[in-house]
Image (cartoon, rainbow, N blue to C red; front, side, top):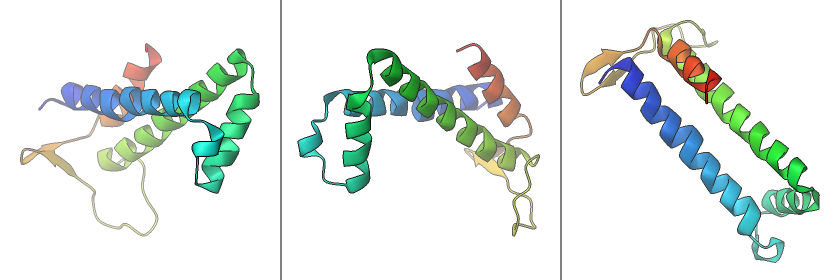
Length: 113
């Protein structure tokens, strides 16, 4: 698998698909059906927003997903050291090492969409 295909698969699964799940959960889950105290507060806050505010919150969630994924890819690429990990972190797909430019490719993909 090429780095480009790997990054696109990560984009589709982690950002696009998960964001759609969060968007739907926020828009369709009645507060009274929520059990988790954090989720109750989040739904209450979301429901208090106007449509522009709701869109802004979903965009913030998207950006957090992108930033977090990019940071993890940077760790795999070796450009973002992690305190307490002295060895190289590597990633392989089908036994083939992949990495070195994943963070950059992922960020470039998200600049356009």
